Structures are given as structure tokens and as C-alpha cells.
Image (cartoon, rainbow, N blue to C red; front, side, top):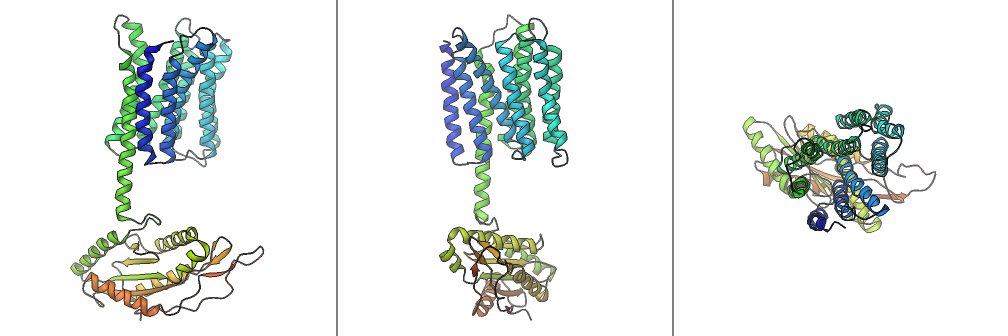
Length: 443
């Protein structure tokens, strides 16, 4: 047994524990793949402890050690692919995992017939290329074609050098590992183009990690008397891990900033951001002598949905309303969720009272489309109050009060949200149309 590897195992295991602690507070599909990848790196170091074991045990440890290092790199690669859940992406990932594993087994167990190695080497590029061509109409991405090009270049290199007497297998193995981690650096460069400290350190770490499989053999061939400690070759692994931890921390900070100004459920601006945008809109209207309209929308009898169908159904309804409102207004306008069942719309120049009334009417019409929640059909009814600056008020607080009063003056009736049970063969339309709502202050 090579007990000298135990400090490396311990160091990487502690680093993975730190990684897992950060990932637990920033749990995503990407971070989960990163964590699995680093567990593979721990397996790599652990397996190399048993490489000196005699017979098949040593061979098995070598295969597991090299294969787990390759699996880690491929997991890091796939985590950076935005369309990784597509069937074609999963096929490419499966082909790369299977081909790399098979090739490593053949090299370690060897020797094998040259035509077998040539066939597997051709699969490195041929498999991903075939999948990419078959799915070219659905996926046209630079990150996919970079993976295909790198895999094809690896196939060519292996076909040329893998059967060379002497150092052919070593060159082939280093080429496979170089390709995996060089591909990881390319994918991270594509996925994290924003210049942050975490992105820079991670990309640099993967580039240095891939260069180990070129510089190490080159020094062994041309500078055999220069001795480099093994910890130096392992340094890029730690750099990459630190960079990825920083990426998760940066993502968590950005998420916290977003939540400070946005509603977590709908993603709309919250009351704090709404007040900032309304103040800015009123200031622009004062400077230009134009109007700004404020629409206050309150859902009628929303509590009935929560009490009857549960809070999960209520959340779905609020998301539906947020989507409807956001799709109706202009990009220069603002839709905010300022209360439990209260939404606010800011209409900036060019606008008028008539235009605001039209927007309010269209929002009501769009909300009339029934929404299926469980076994019930839910039709949204709302009360809307409209106030226009500077006709109705000259400051933000007075404008909000005017819109609120008009909304409450309208909120005297309201239609039921829960219509009737949905049954097979039943029409999705409600049994009766709700009474038309009037928009206060829209004359």
C-alpha cells in the first residue's frame, strides 16, 4: 500500500466537506454535479493508495483511480452545459463516460489488439459527432460543437500515437485526461463569461489541471533529472475547488441581493423596489411634464383559494397572475407584488388616464381565462384602482392613497374564484361569467 497518499486523501476530503457545507446553502442541479465530481476526486486519491497491491487488486485500484478522475472532469463539463437535460446532451454525456471508461480499462489491462484500441479511439469523436449532427436542428450551440471538436481531435491523436511502441499507452492516457480537463475549462469559460474572482480562479485552475498531463510527461522526457514534488501537480485541483466554492458564494450573494428587492414566489419587484421605481418615475414625469399612472390590483376572495385548495394552489395562482400582468405591460413599465394578493402596475410615459383604463380592462379580460388547480376551475376576479400623476396627486404617498381608495371603493362585490369541480368530458369554461367590473377613476 502507498500510505504516502493518505495526506492527499485527507486534504481533499476536508476540502470536499467544506464544499458540501457551502453547497448545502446553495443547492442547485449544477452544484450537486460539482459535489459528486469532487467525491470522485476523493475516490481517485483513495484508490491510488491501493495501486501497489499485488495482482488484480492493484489493477482494479488503478482502473478505479484513473476512471474516477475522468468521471469527475466529465461531470464538471456537463454541469456547465445549459441544455444538459436534453436527450441529445445525455447521449453525448453517456457516450463520453462509456468510451473513456472502456478505453482506460483497455489501456490498464492491456495489451490488446491494435484494431480494438483504434475502434474505441474512433468512438471518442465519432459518437458525439453523430449525436450532434442528428440533433443539429434542435441545438445549435458553440459549447456543444467545442466538445465535439475537442473529442474529434482526441480521436485523431489517439489513432496516431496510441500504438507507438514504448510510450504510446502513456501518451494516450495523458491525452485523455488532458482533453477532459481542458474541455472543463472551455465549458466554464463559456458558462461564466462574467469576470468574477470565482470564475477566473476556476478557469485558471482547470487550465493548470489539464496542463499537468502535458507538462509532467514532457519534463519526464526532456528533463529527467528535475524532481517535482507530487503536491505541486495536485495544486491545480485545490485551486479549482477554491474557485468553485467562490462561484457558489458569489451566486448566493447575488441571490440574496435579488431577494432583497424581489418577491421570492413570483420574481416580481417587491414593495421596496416598487417604491424606488415609483419615486424615479414621478421624478421623470416632473422634469418632462408628462403623466404617470398607478394601477393597484387586489384579487377578490383569494383567501378562499388558500382555505379550500391549500397554499400550494394559492401560490400557483399568484404565479399565474404575475405572468399574465408581466406579459401585458411594456418593458419600461413595472409590475410589482406589494402584498399577499396585491399587485401594482406603474405605467410610465407615454401614458394617460384613458390608456391606463385600457390596460386595466385588458388585465381583467386576461384574468378571466379559467385556471385548473387540482380538481377545481379557478377564475380570477380582481378590483382595480387607478390614480394618475399629477392630476390625482402630486407626491408618491398621495398617489398610492388615491389608487388604494379607488380600489376599495370598487371592491364591494367581486366574483367567486372557485367555479366548479373539473370532471372528465366537462368544458373548461366556467358555468357563468362573472359580472363586469368597472374601473374607478377611468372615465
